[in-house]
Length: 125
Image (cartoon, rainbow, N blue to C red):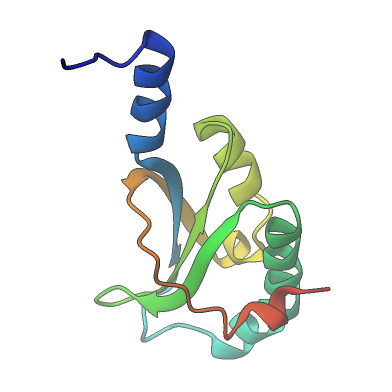
């Protein structure tokens, strides 16, 4: 005899199978690489770390890193938020917005059991 899951059991299974929604904050420098002022960028790093620590302490920070576009410096911060408006409120706190702009992308993400926490101590106050 085959049994069917109850509606409650089916709902719980559906919720656990859903991918988590993560907001990607993609920062791009206003200046091209030819005009990029590294010193101006570096002056913002302490405030950037403070902003990242705050996101971490509030449980919003998923991951972050720097990189670039073809002709512009850039960065990526992945966060959890209650919705796109909340994500943009959090993004507004980045001091890097003073020298660039942040775009918001929404991703449904599958998290594997891979964890790299080597940099986590830098985020603890």
